[in-house]
Each structure stands twice: as structure tokens, then as C-alpha cells.
Length: 80
Image (cartoon, rainbow, N blue to C red; front, side, top):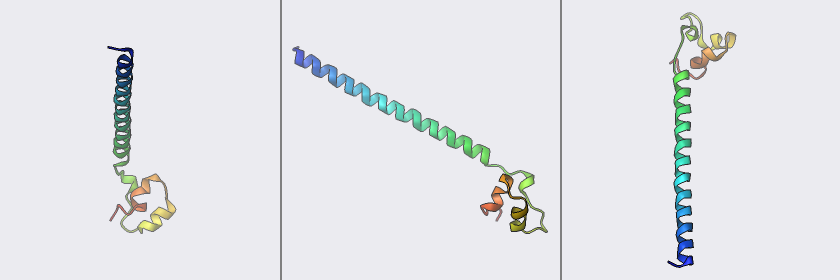
């Protein structure tokens, strides 16, 4: 093998390693994003009795007088 062949082989190996490393980093990043999304959905996907309105009170009035995070279902029309 000549010096040029050796150099080409080293460059090719280096480029291949960089591509595999880039793919691994992309996979790790995607896994982290998916896990963060799952955690967000799990913590936001529940209702407490405090967010339910009394039947005689209008939903918009309850949201107006007691507007906070527990009224999220009312604000997004998830109560219909």
C-alpha cells in the first residue's frame, strides 16, 4: 500500500466514524425529546375535582372568577 492509499483509508474511516457519531447524537437527542414529551403529557393529563365547576354555575363565570391552571379544561373547551 502506498502512502496515498493509507491516507485515503484513514480519511474514509474518519468520515465514516463522524457519520455514525452524528447519527448516534441525533438518536440520543430524539430519545430525550420524546421522553420530555411523555413526561409533559403524563403530568398534564389528569383532572382534579377542584377544576370541576358546580352545575349551577356557568363555566365562563367560574373561569373569570377563579382563573388559574386548574381551570385549564374549561379554558380549552375540554369540558364539552
